Amino acid sequence: MWVESASPTPAKTLKALTIVSYLAPNWFWFYEAIAASISQALQREISLIQSFHDPLHDPLLQQDQVDLAFMCGLPFIRQHQRVPQQFQAVVAPVMASPRYHNQPIYFADVIVNAASAITTFEQLAGSTLCYNDVGSNSGYNLLRYRLLQSHLHSFFSKTIPSGSHQGSIQWVADGLASCAAINSTVLEQALRNDPHLAQRLRVVETLGPCPMPPLVAAQQLGSELIAQLRSLLLAPNLMLQEAMEQAHVQGFAIVTADEYEILAEMYSATLRRGHQF
Image 1: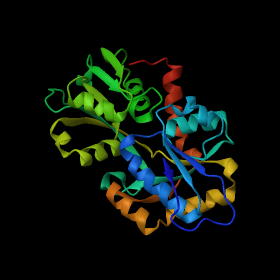
Image 2: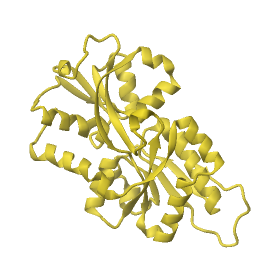
Image 3: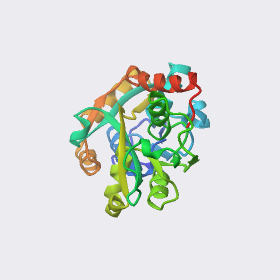
Image 4: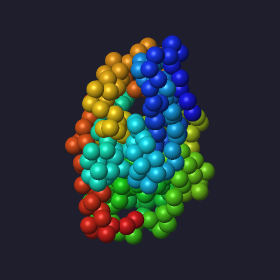
């Protein structure tokens, strides 16, 4: 989609910025608000795309055609380790709920169907797990690390990819899978969108916290523009403030790649041990 500034076109036409969201579609409306705010402030057209690619396998990203991206922290740090000069973290949202302690963090909530007899993580042994994708920190990486820490092997009887957090939520609610680990902010948004889901799901364990998925910027944009983008989000305009209130986002915080190294360490630990579900 295109987001265009409502103000007069500047004398010099600038190349449109390409922003890609690799995150859950139920937050796309919020990224639209961010894109509109950036477009208005910079007097610049924005091309905003919802991608269903793993960022590490997205041709746009690999060909340096992505200017800004909303991205899970795990693929961000893995890409940063491969190509350190490609992207830098700009900001990450800070959620308003007390569980987030005024920090840019989130959790993975392990959900089951509300009618299930399962009440603890250990009781998930032998059940069917669904996950959004293997590149996800909350839906896959944290679960593998939890099993590694507990020395649990061949824990689930079956694991099936749903393709998205929202797909996993629906599968568990419909009884098509026993459990799933869901990004807490995605689950909270799903419950706001459909309050009846609260009667169909139950959280049996919470994993984390982890650093919040960041907005990252291509370093080829230049330090001046990246600093301007960061300032825009640290002091949001009224339009963006309204969207933030609706999304239960209290603000944005500056983040750096170093804060996401812990995710890569957990990922590497599971690879070294050859740990499987």
